[in-house]
Length: 384
Ligand code: MG
Image 1 (cartoon, rainbow, N blue to C red):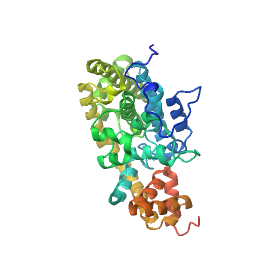
Image 2 (cartoon, rainbow, N blue to C red):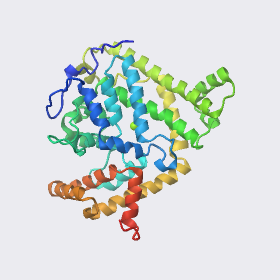
Image 3 (spheres, helix red, strand yellow):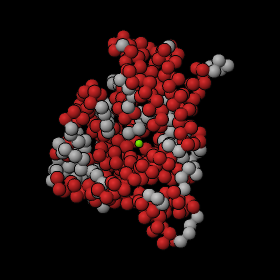
Image 4 (tube, helix red, strand yellow):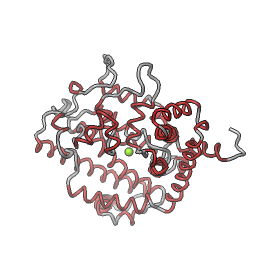
C-alpha cells in the first residue's frame, strides 16, 4: 500500500490557507483539523435526524443524512488511498457535503427554493458552505469554522453564476470554468456511488423495489447473475448484500482505474495544473457512466417518484412552505437570535436578507423539529 502522496494531490504545503490565519496544532494536519471541526459541529449532529430518501420516523434502519455522509467518507477515503490523494481532505469534504441540507431531503430543498425564488432562491450545496463559513457560531475570533480553502472548495460542488460572483475565492472556478482539487472531484463522485447503492438497498428493504424489477437494469442484473451462479438461491438479505457489494466495487474499481489513466494522460504534476484542466480528471469510464444513467433513471421513476414516497414528500413540502410563509411574514415567531439576525440583514439587504435568515432557520431544522414547529405554529391547541 502506497503512503506517499502524489505530487498532484492537495498537499498541505500548497494549501491556500484559512480566511483567518491560525497557528497550526502540532499534532494534526490542516485537513484533519477541518474534519474534527466538522464532526464537532451542531450541523453535523443534526444530520442524524434528516431525511436521505425516507423520512426519519418511517423506520430506524434506513439511511439518514448522517449515515449517508459516513458512507461517502468511507468510499472517498478508500479511493483516495489507492490514488495517493489526501485522505483527510476527502474525509472532511465528504462529512461536510450535506451539512446544508434541509429537512425532508430533496423535497424539502425544492420547496424552500420555490418559496425563496423571489429573494435569490435556496441551494442546499451553497448552504453547506454557508453553514461552515457563517452559521456555526462557537469560535470567539471568527464566524463559522474557518476551514481551509481546499475543504471549502470541495464542499461547493456546484453553484449558479450569480451566487459564485458573491462568494469570492471559492466561487471563482465557476466563473473561470476551472476544476477543484482531485480530492474534491473524488468526494463528489463518492457521493453518487454511495447513494446509487444505498438507495437500492433501502428501496428493497422498504419493499418499494423488487429484485425482478431491478433486474431490468443491466448493471444490477450482471452482478445479480454472478451471485446466483456462485451461490444459487440465497436468503433475501444475503442476496441483496452480495449483489450490492459487487455493484459498489465495480463503481470503485472503474472510477480509480479511469481516473488513474486520466491523470497520467493529462500529465499533471501540481494541484494548480489540476485546477487549470477544462474537465475533471476523476471520472468513470464511458461505458459505466452510460449504465449508471440507466440506473439513475430507474431509481428516479421507481423509487424517488414512488407513490408512497411521493405522498410523504408532498406533505413535507407543505410543511416547509407553511413554515416559510408564517416566519417570513412575522419574524418574531422565530427564536429571538434569528429574529434579531433577520432584522439586521433586512436593514442591510432588504427582503432578500430577511428571507435568507428564515431559510437558514428552516434549513437547520431536523425532520421532526420541522414537524413539531409546524404544529406549534399552526395548531391553536398547542400552547408552546
Ligand atoms: Mg450527499
